[in-house]
Length: 427
Image 1 (cartoon, rainbow, N blue to C red):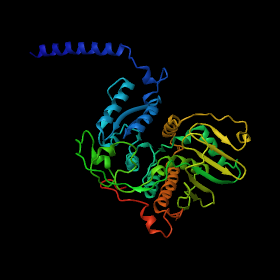
Image 2: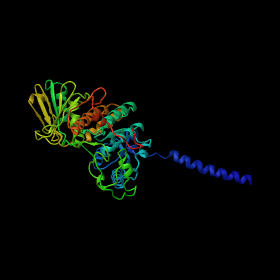
Image 3: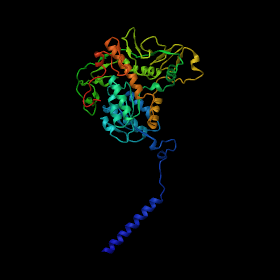
Image 4: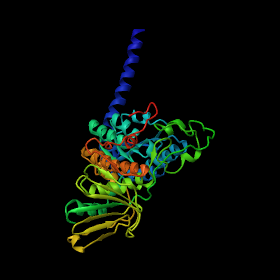
């Protein structure tokens, strides 16, 4: 009996050895993409990205990410089932697989250790809270704007990004467009003489508080998670109209029309032109379709609705003692003198593509350097917008202490620096 067992084991040993030797002798086939050949990027060099709240703008942003060879988009989170399904289909078709994971709760996406960075393109009500959670989870982030809902959130977000050492890029993509960059350079480097005024187009200057809409039947949580949709905002009854459009605030708080939407682009460019210094310290009430703010150094930031040259949306204008420049989304520059070009050719890129801005972000994720729309720059620009919005809402001048970012001797204005957030979303 023992001999039979011994012979059987020998046969098995010979078969196993033969199979093993065959496997060793057979050539190992490694896809060229795994080696970074044929234009592919090796897995070790890829940035794994997840998306949070990918609607209309987010889908455009995602397209810019998917154009980059070193990006691997791995997961999408959205409170709406229709959006989760659409983004998964878009991504899976891009990669020719079924690997894009879907989540309803963004915290599950952030728990994934393989995800390096996230695209945050929710409604503005969620931007800061989602960014804070992402930073604490060790993710870098590209966050659409407006990035914050008030002055206090702007300061907390900036401090959190600094403390966690994450790479943060606000979605102010015009910082990476050549004509805007050139105009800001002229202002910042003294080519216009001593800078006197910077102009921003807010595309509307209204400040109101959000109201309630008639209650409707709440959909199944898997279809639309209404509680998660509201997130940190004050509770409101479900109404389908709140699911569409921009909707800066889904309940409670001060709403700021164009000052916090287009304004966060145009004011950001003005901030860049003055050297990314702290926000202005005085904000007058609106008069004749404009609002004048003043920096501590005397430069005026003017929110102006009318009298722009026809240079497309998001126009800005910078005036110094010896020259001026104006530009907008047409990609064209108008200069007080052609000598300001100094023989340079500035690329004319119409519209406001985000591709260059996304590339700037990805490069900084790899180098661990600061992107152009970093958290410090975004904080100062957003504070300027929020303070202007407070002046609009109160209909009078307000003064801001640049060291504390509190309004001076103004209890009413200071109550508008922040707002209560629903549990468990306190910052």
